[in-house]
Image (tube, rainbow, N blue to C red):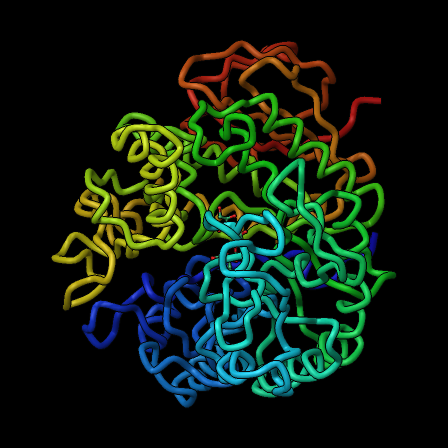
Length: 556
Ligand code: TEU
């Protein structure tokens, strides 16, 4: 395979509200990001992805946009944004904007007009169905809980909202909607933005007939819908390709077959896709709110299937453990005790960065930030968390059970402000932070990490740098060689006779691991312990959470 420059990139995700507050109002801002450019440069990432910063009532923290070609004053001005873009470009960092195009805020002027009358031209920008106040058109459920239909009295109709009631789904069938969307994308592309992250982009194609779902919550009727690919091709032809924009599509409940089509270069749709299957192996019966320990064999199988499957057909994965919708990975698939937090955070990083695809690092992940360990529901802010806390109790569970579920699974776990140093408010703000800071900030913070050569930060720095020099990490074929039932994940990346070999112990116990396929190990590229594991050529004794990446050659 020929390597495109972007294929060796690592991307850093910024959730601006919680990243760094320069003006002391408790909310992170654009100036705050600009202040941290040297930090980002030091980490070595190639691109930042900023979650939505356009004007928004913030019912879903910016994923409810009320104006697309402007900056939310809470974050700063368009001028400041241009300055940020310019300063990033000056040090060779690219910028990816988050584009929320499946829905708008109901505060958007389109919806405000649309809801007045059926004859308004903006009415057809959204998806409407007849119904009486007591009877929504279908039984579809919103992703945040409750019906996905909102009643509009003025027109005696329902509008579709797959997310919050204030996030109305756009009607992509309407060519005027697609023209508006292209205008928005062109606006940002003209400013010099380098990438787009496309929010829930596989949900944009809805059916024409709306039917009850007797098997589920309705998602099978609108996920990876019939027109998604043709809409993406249209955007690619008119915007992504002409402006040289890197794209990542966020795919909700998708399939591998669909992601292959979205990303294989011949199709001219997207550069890569996020899928979430590997982040559901701790959901009991697929239900996010039912807790279960992580199923390691399911995790290994999913990661491996997506590696092999995408590779075989020329697709490209976006690789990630964390984002603003997920609990912190070290508290989830790792171990956030004092003894193992650093070791397990490094192990998870090494496993992910050895895979084929584009790694995304979510702010704070590079210092091993944990879930905040809160004790009361009023510490949480997220709309989904608050809805589910009520719904779980309505389904018969106690308040304590509901709290246990939401505190483990809340999206706020990943949204607490970045812990910059041990000073008051963790150096995030001089004011009152919009969301409480995790109490462990005096111990876990950027300043501490930067002061110590063996910190998680420098481990990420090395992984990012390896991608630039080890072409096998980009091109190498994936081959797995552990046994499904064991707590070790082991795989090779093979290009010609070169092998990059990864072994990782996901448990807090020592494990004796027997090699199935020996290779000549030439060099240890990275490990999270001092000194190599005991290696007698046929078997390896891995210490708790030990992980190693070697370079070697195939035995012929
Ligand atoms: O998320 C899409 C999505 O479906 C989830 O990750 C969602 O948070 C989860 O399924 C709920 O259980 C994207 C954004 O990343 C998220 O922040 C937004 O809330 C959502 O779209 C709506 O725009």
